Length: 554
Image (cartoon, rainbow, N blue to C red; front, top):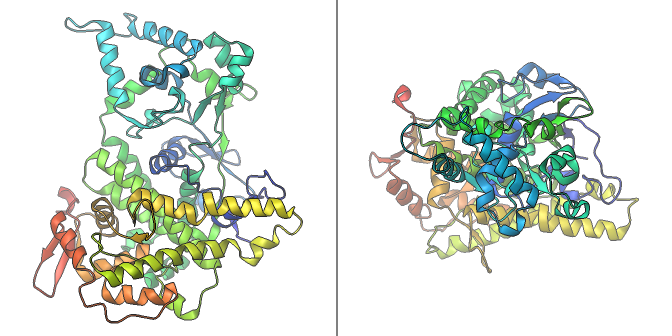
C-alpha cells in the first residue's frame, strides 16, 4: 500500500470512511474535482497562515512552515493540526448585501445592523470632511467586495476573499438553514452560542482538502534528506541552484518568500480587516474560533499525502519560491500561484499514477523524470500529425490514471468489502478523483482543449506560458531556448519539439515518429517572442529570459 505522510492510520475499512475510495488511497486525502483552482490556493494559504501544532507541539506563528528540525523528526501517528479563523463579522460586512435575498436569515440581518452601529460609533469611526458615516462604510464594503475570490452564488458566510492579506483568509463556514428553521432561531447571540449547531465548520465541501494536501507535500519534500534529494535533482535536470537543492536553505528561503507575498499589498487592508472582524464588543470570534470545552483555538486535522511524492513536492517548493520572488504585481502573483497549485495537482496525479500503473520498458524510457509525458500541440492545431499525437497522449494519460487505481495492492484492500460498495467506489474514483479530475483541472487551466466535445489535446495559452517562464527560470536570469525546453520536460513532462514529441509516441503506446518536419515548436518561439521574453542571438540560438528579478538581480 501507499505509505502515508504523516504516518497516520487511514480510515478505509468500510463504505463511508474518509479513505475508502481507491483514488484517495493512491493520491492522498484528497484532490477533488469540485474544488476550484482559486480554492486550492485559498486553502493552502489558510493552512499556512493559521496557528498549527503537531502532537501538541506548537509551530512558531511567525513562520508559515514548521521548523525544519520538527519536520525531520515528525512523530509517528501525529497529524498536522491547524486552527483557522471563521472571520464571520468580516464576511457579513463585505458580502451580505451582495448575496441572494433568500439566503439572508433574520439573525444575519440583525447582526449586520449591530455591526454597522458598532462601526459608526464615534470612538471607532472618525471622519474628516463632509462625508457621512454611511458613505464611508459603503465605500469600505465596496473595497472589500472587490477582493471577493469565490462563492458569489453562495450564502455570504460560504464566500471567500483573495488571500492578499492574512486577516482576509477565513475558514469554510456553511449556514445550516434546516437547523435554523427547525429551531426557529432569530437571535444572533443564540446562533453563536450554538455555533457548531447552526454553522458547519470545516466540512471540506468547497475547501475540500486539496490545499491541505499541497501543504503536506511541501512539508514532506523539505524533510527529505539532502543526499537523497540532491541525487534525484541532479539526474532530473530540473535546474536547481545550490540554495534550492538544499532542504535547509530552501526551507528558510521559501518561508521568507511566502511571507513576502502579503507585504506586497498595503498593510491598511490587513488592519482594516482585523478592525471590522473584531469591532463588536461581544466579538463573534470568541464563540467561533475557541473550543468551549478546552478554551483553546478550534483545531482541525489535515489529511495525508503519499510519502513518495517528495519529488513533485520539491519541484512545487522551488516553483513557489521563484514566483514569490518575482517582481510582479501582487494580484498577478496570486493568479500565477493559483496556476502553480492546479499544475501541481495535475503533476501529482500523473507522477503517482506512473509509479503504480504497469508500463512497457520502452515507454518508461521515453518518459520524463516523473514517469510521464504531456505532448503539447500548437494552439491553432495546424500541425495535423502533432495534433493527433497529442490526442493519443491525452488518452494515454487518462488510461495511466485509470490503470493505477486498479493496482493489485489497492484492490486487495477491498477483499472483505461488499462488491457493490467496491464498484461504487471505483465509479466515484474515476469520475471525481481520477482521470476525470485530471481532465477537469486541465481544461480549467486551458492546458487541454476543447473544453467540450471530442478530440481533447494538450496546448499552452499565454497565462500558462507566463507561469512556465517565471517558475522554471529564476527571476532575473536567462537560459538558452534548448535549455528552456529541457526544463519544461523536467518540471512537468512537457514535450514541445520534434524529438520530444516523437519520443512521446512510445510512452503513449505507438511507434516513435522521426518525420515531423522540424517545425513542431515554431509556435512556441512565436509565443515567447510575442511575450517579450525571447532574445534572438542568431538563427540557431535564442535565449529565454525571466525579466522580473527586480533591481537586486538586474
